Length: 272
Length: 312
Image: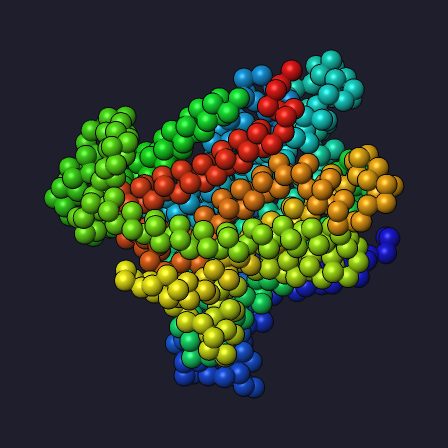
């Protein structure tokens, strides 16, 4: 194991802490997600470390449960967008010709509308539930992954070993998953960190607009929405999720940077 | 070249209108059902289907919608029965005012900061600028919004926390009212814009003619301003346009934070009310602006680069 630089180590620790809190929320959270335990907007005290929210729920518990929802939705959406985007991207690069044209132009078209606008348009007719949210976010985001995966795979698809595999008579699936995927993995993994952050910001924004995770379920964007009236009276409850989202974003970024640097230096800079 | 690019933009806009239509009308599930919810009676469902014209085939509905849009008729809102176009027009003007003010501040600031950090690259001004901008990128707009409200309007009472704009306000009053949303928007795009400007100019700085200029003994700032900048115009304009397009999206969230009567607020309200015609109209306008800005970016970069203007 090589030495991990300080920035990446910090990033790993914070990211790990957030994921651990999300996984073990039922064990860590001092109170239930929707349990009313005090007055509205109590200041922080020994029993409520971060104080209480607009209707008297413990804010620390809401944050932990909310992180669970936010991270769960973001992870699912990221996995979906990677599964879909990279498979289609590799497929387009291997096939070429009209398959590539049709897929690439479709993606261009989808990217010509800002993804927040597309999401709002679709959510205006679809019921707002977690699976629908994950599906919408995953599909919209897969266009970005598709672009990257295709760009990386086009370079790999002309390599001699891919040619050799083709001449051996390997099937399309073998070429995609056994020849191209292992060689395209490092830039994709680094990109995955960025897409995950994007998904966290996206779901928070939707929830903040009231069109994401629905109450009484908690999530970080929703906590901001619930407590935003407090800001005017100088109660900073709505700023706590801000801190959580920003620190998660920065720490995942640090880890992704490190992964990208490490893998690209191993392979003579091709990963960049 | 330019005409070709323009035609492509129109085609893209047309395709986007198809996509928006498909997104709301042909998705699985019944639009009338989801608008009315589970408690709808069969009679009200049938009425609404009739009113939306859902009994006609999708293609017919699409073309009647499209021709309406081309003649400036965006249909009527389901929630209050008013025609959409006049309501949308006023709000579009408000949004454009907000976005334009933010752009007027952000664009020169980003370019100057970009130039500065190239001039002092890898020294403390560069590092300071890039750390601060990285922080502003990592926080979503609505949170920046509340942080700004918390400090500037609650703790220090400098600016109003709500951006209420109404007709009859003088220009100065309007500028004061929107000061906070403008600050948030500027912060939201400044980071990206400055970093991309820096990268674009650094790219040019590596070319041979810049080295020549350095060896001639020109002052560093003259080299950047006279030799690097003109060649970086195309990428910088591209960066600016991409970020203005991003501004259009950021506006949606910022308007909700500051209860500003613009397009974004209008769209979000009507998504919650499941008012499909309004959502379609707003989606189309946003897509149009977005595609238009990207188109301008392409055209400018063609015009600024002789090698693209006269392809071999």
